[in-house]
Length: 379
Image 1 (tube, rainbow, N blue to C red):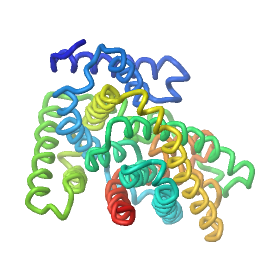
Image 2 (tube, rainbow, N blue to C red; image 1 turned 180 degrees about the vertical axis):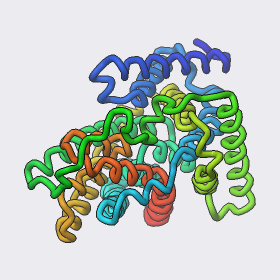
Image 3 (cartoon, rainbow, N blue to C red; image 1 turned 180 degrees about the horizontal axis):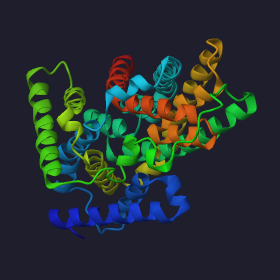
């Protein structure tokens, strides 16, 4: 068994490389995502005795490591882009966020006996991830100290439910009627395609320089330190929300916006964090808790769907806008972009991406509120 912390880190780094390459080359893995693949590979290595069940490497990745990743991703969120979304898309996204919170609360109350004492944690995490994306899921897991096995089970459930929901949203506008669109709206040329946070999670849209890297490290480490200090000084406002607030505010500074590669490095750190979680998970525990956690995720998204499409219909929002907004909630900017592109809703691409970015910004706040409420209700 490998026990040296540096060697453990090397193995986890190799796991992330393999997961990314498999996602790029294999269709099935692309559906599962590099995140879930990294968890599964690391879990396998741990359960066959190659990696240890506990390590200081995991402790680092689940502490400063994931916090740095979250800070780097949030530094790349441009809140001004939300203004491009328009009132109808913002309304649809807001309804969807409320639906997600209601679904997480309903799922938690219905399944608390099956899921166990970490029900309130999953309620918060599912609220965060189905408001804007996986970075929120990781941030809230860190804040709630969710067990590795529960985290891995919830990640697997999240991937499956998100994929099924994409199929549903693709079908809704076709079955219920196409939305009104701007007929003259052309597809954006390849060179002018919207630069989304999700694109920068996988590559650097602009060339990176040593100045960019040095600036990002200084700002991100400073944000993590500042959030920790404020969390200790003012404990009524949790550290993860301090970190979210500080990183979002810094990300609006023009000089910070010009730094390239923040989301790319942040995504890499989160993938390492996920691999570390997988290595700490015991397969037997994961299988035992799997079905209730899957039902929890499914109920959360189902209630989200009932509310966004039901209330959206009452407010006379078109099905296409509602489907794209729902994908921005459940899958993040990339899913919104994919949904709009797949159905030819070219006038919905920029609004969908914009509200997806908004989800990254507000998901931690909403998730923490729901988690805290559920903790109080469930005792």
